[in-house]
Image (cartoon, rainbow, N blue to C red):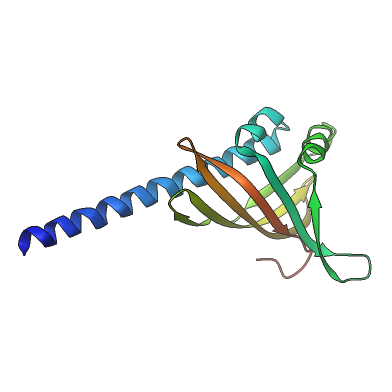
Length: 151
């Protein structure tokens, strides 16, 4: 009985350690994505995402109705790298809530977005990641955007 309990304890500890390691790797992938984003470096951004990444945003249309917009990844990259050097922008991630199940992970990251040191908007990013050949890759990003009731 003692041997069984010891074995069970070791399995639980090993699983917990592996999950924490994966959570840190997921966070590192997202932080690297934002390093590329803030440096307008498409190579860094592309190294963190899968070839089939999906980008979506939930926001309001001109009439105030909630809507979901899908963005083309190549257009997203072009828009980021074409931001003039005179424009300073920063997406500040306020926290990370990461869940991992095998080769799938989800990260929930409330954020504030600033342009030229002025508040622009806030919201939450939801990242879906897939562990591909030992590396976490972002396969889906959806975010919310608003100017009030910020996290």
